[in-house]
Length: 69
Image (cartoon, rainbow, N blue to C red; front, side, top):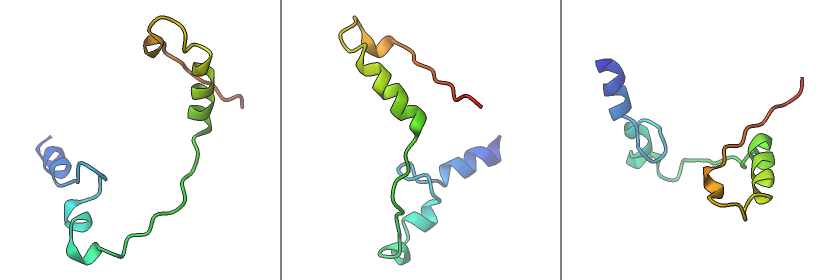
């Protein structure tokens, strides 16, 4: 447990990478960011949620999803 806590403390709270990498001066200008990918499950859930926007407390509704085999 102590080792896990030490490891988690070494990570950047913003990006989740080790601080000695993401906050090093040598890293500046060397970072590449690939194009985003899409979570199709989240896309489907967000689409389904639109139909419930007028319900009382729509943020309290819990949505799930399944993907057939």
